[in-house]
View 1 (cartoon, rainbow, N blue to C red):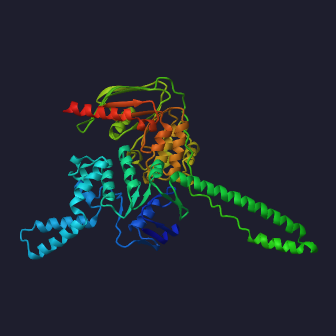
View 2 (cartoon, one colour; view 1 turned 90 degrees about the vertical axis):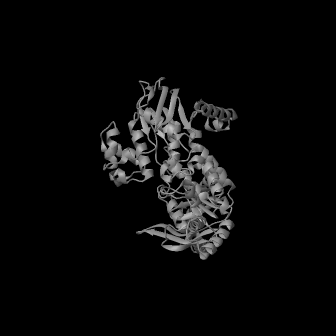
View 3 (spheres, rainbow, N blue to C red; view 1 turned 90 degrees about the horizontal axis):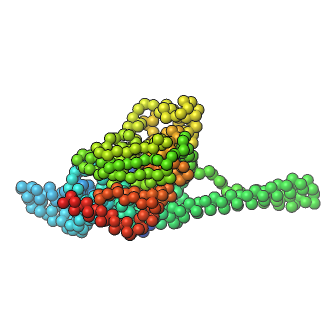
Length: 544
């Protein structure tokens, strides 16, 4: 059990949290939700002891071990992958290293022998002999193959590091598990594995995620942060949404009845207060009026951007033809004679674990990378707008937001550009912020403003939901559903894919799988699963 008791956190004059009291109990998975800036990650850091609150205490049951997902992807660069995972249980890792140091001594003393004996007993009591195999099982489940377990962390790419750090957090069956955006940068197979792990996990989990499907699958409770308070709801994300909307509706209806009663009492008092025969009744109604209190209807801190992609030109029948496209990166053939044709009604989700192949394809189609072989041809009526997975270089400048957007606008007018920023919740002075100081979510909203202002009829989007809050994801989701053009996209958000895509592509080792279907149907189709397996086996046989 972990409990927040009267937690207050002040940042300058602003109180991010004000006397928060909440208890997280064993056997439950809590989804911590709230708008960007509400303090979700900060609250997790308070619970984990990384941040000291201004007032209040965090209480953890004696003897329980807390584990959290590390956010510094470079912290363990000088360590081996397997060791990094085992570090999730610090005491066990320290015992292992102390044992190694003692046994490596040339002048092994009696004191060393006694200390080694103590360590061996504690090591065995902590199931230390299973540590490496347990760590390997977690890594394999998340898609880190055995041949990578003895590499150094600095030899892995970003998404692989995320998986290792996630395995570290899960290692050793912690009593309390804190996960901040655990599905970010994970492929769908790894997300599915994590979902099953958390569903079967018997201890306490508190998770921050913007993946609505993920929260619905794993959460038993929702902890909603709004205006510095945390309200607890039983049930998953959809149940929270329905419950919170019902609560607001009931409060509005109750207030409406109270307002009608107030008006009725006020009219009676005004009419009969000067009437001697009715004065007692008027006085009684005054007392009744004083007792009526309207429920406080404080507006939510949640704000929804307005996302509406309007193409400047209607798209024709010829959209895109890709023929035998190949690309090798660092000696690895990422794309191997890829061919497909895109129609004018297509909204294609690229799924599967080979995210590098999809990102490479998108960069080629956006003109940011040249293929080694093959070609692609856009239709003459098409115009493209590209959302990259990594936008670091796009914002590596000293421009303010308005100036950064201006080159993409057909109208070189500050008011016109500010209108698009206003839709994306950049109000007033926000428009003069320098782009390089923006948060991850703000940068995504600026990129989406750019795509709206360009008016393209083909959108290429590589993980556009990363860093967005629930409200922005919902707005983007709805905007792409009603978009009349073509969309090529990737996402780890199951609901996002299911509601937008009408065609699914997966780049496998054995070739391209291309199906006109919904995402749920694609996943449920056993024949396709078998086909993926057959293609993989064929590819392995060809390599041999």
